[in-house]
Length: 116
Length: 112
Image (tube, rainbow over all chains, first blue to last red; front, side, top):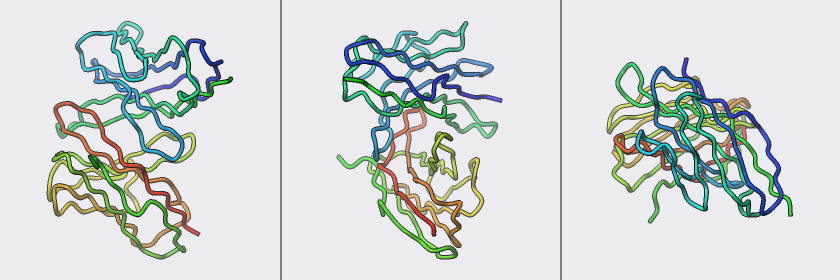
C-alpha cells in the first residue's frame, strides 16, 4: 500500500539554524510530492511541489526539498530558521486510484518549534 | 481573491443534531474534497467529487453525506452528529492536471 512517513512528529531548532524535516514515501512509481505548511488555526498552504521535473525543488519562504528516488525520500530543508516558520508541516504524495482519479496520501505531520 | 471558502468556521452541536458545512471555490476546479483533521492522524479523506453531480467515498465516509449540485460548491452533511465527529473539517479543491490542493481555512465542529 502507498504511504507517506514523516519521521519526526516534533522538531525544535534555534532561530538562524538549519531546518530539516524528513519524509519518506512508498510507491511503486514516482508520485507527485508536496509539502504543505499549517499555521495555528489556519488551512494548509502549499510550500512546494515535485512533479517529475528537477529533483531539487525550491518553494516559498526559502524552503526547498530534494527528491531522491533511490532513497524514496523528499526531505524539506531551509538554511536558516525564522520564528515565523513555527508551524506544522505535512508531506503529501499524489497517486492514481484504480478508477483513474487522483488520491492524496498525507503524512501525520511534523510540528516545528523555533527557539529564540 | 477568495479561493476556497468554508462556512461556518465554528459550530457546536448536541449528539443527534444535523448540520451542513458549505464549501465554495471560485477557481473553476473540477475536483473537490472534504477532509477531517484529528491530532496525530494527519488529514483523512471523507468524500470527494471529480465533477458537478458526482461524489465518491473516501477513507472515513461513515456518518457523512455530500452533494455537489453546482461545480463551485461541495456540501458536507452530518445527519445525526456523534461525539466522534468532533474534529476540524477542511475542504480542498484541485485542478486535476497540476495536482496542487487548495485548502479552506477549516471548520471546527464540536459535538457534545
